Image 1 (tube, rainbow, N blue to C red):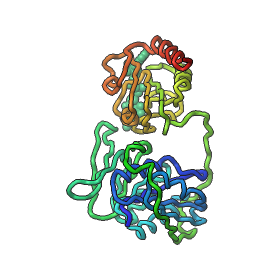
Image 2 (tube, rainbow, N blue to C red):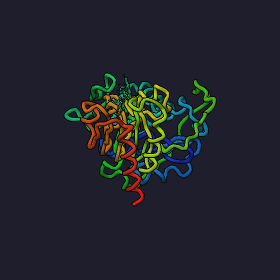
Image 3 (tube, protein in one colour):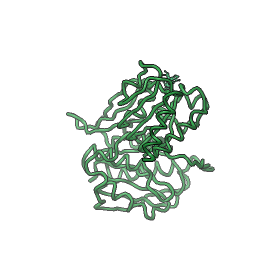
Image 4 (cartoon, protein in one colour):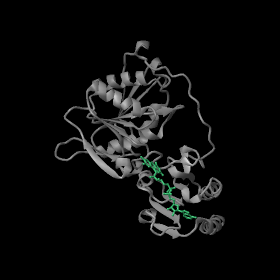
Length: 329
Ligand SMILES: Cc1cc2nc3c(=O)[nH]c(=O)nc-3n(C[C@H](O)[C@H](O)[C@H](O)COP(=O)(O)OP(=O)(O)OC[C@H]3O[C@@H](n4cnc5c(N)ncnc54)[C@H](O)[C@@H]3O)c2cc1C
């Protein structure tokens, strides 16, 4: 019997970070937690899930699951759900999960909660409750499900603190089971033509313990070189507000917020960012926020642990000098 089934993602022979997020969220819901891994070749992947704290690993290996065919994954996951009968199915809001989740829910005739940032065991009804940003991130809605299972929740990457749930990171999978699924070429409606990977030297935002972000207040792309240097000194990654990305100063992969990345660093430094609710939706899990903004009334100061009211072009150089001294000593 499995209570919560997490749809495990992997790439290049490694378990993807979203899988750890989903397992941590599953632990928060409670009950027996399982992960399902699907693919053409799952060699070495099962062992990687054990330290994440799952009770059971299901593997579904089939030649037609090689590549990124959503149609195949939908069919395979539907078959797994009918067999395993989980109470809750968790998927990541990733390129794959955001497609597979609603399709599987439709096929099983159950509801799905997209773009969830939290999931918890329900109150009196015993159904789970998912939390989702609504109205452009200005409010949070709590949604629950009818009586059918599984209750399908598609979760934003980075929304759950991985280490915060008892059991996560400690457990060893007690059981493993290989599930056979029936797939054939007629299932495929969409053909995957090509994957173009963008190589980047940048440190990834997800998982970074320090993030330094710039916003419209920087007034151009050039100051991002200073942010890169500061992030380098602190061993962190660089991010940006949507305004800075929309202006073309940095790529949209830098964007943090409701329609960008969700981060949970130990330290988040913002420079020339107002702290709009849509931006904060992606960084409210930061342990400490340090803000530099010339407007004392900027919303970011309501969220920041430390702040400097001033022009970044004056504040940042001395801040960086102080950090350099600390790094040298
Ligand atoms: C549906 C929807 C989704 C969205 N998703 C996102 C998202 O994912 N991420 C996101 O960031 N935004 C998002 N937005 C946009 C969001 O509402 C804000 O417009 C955006 O975050 C503002 O970016 P900003 O803080 O850089 O710019 P502004 O709000 O213009 O703030 C600039 C700040 O810089 C300060 N400043 C100016 N000059 C200086 C200086 N010399 N020194 C110091 N400070 C200075 C100003 O006082 C100001 O506070 C979304 C909006 C919508 C409607």
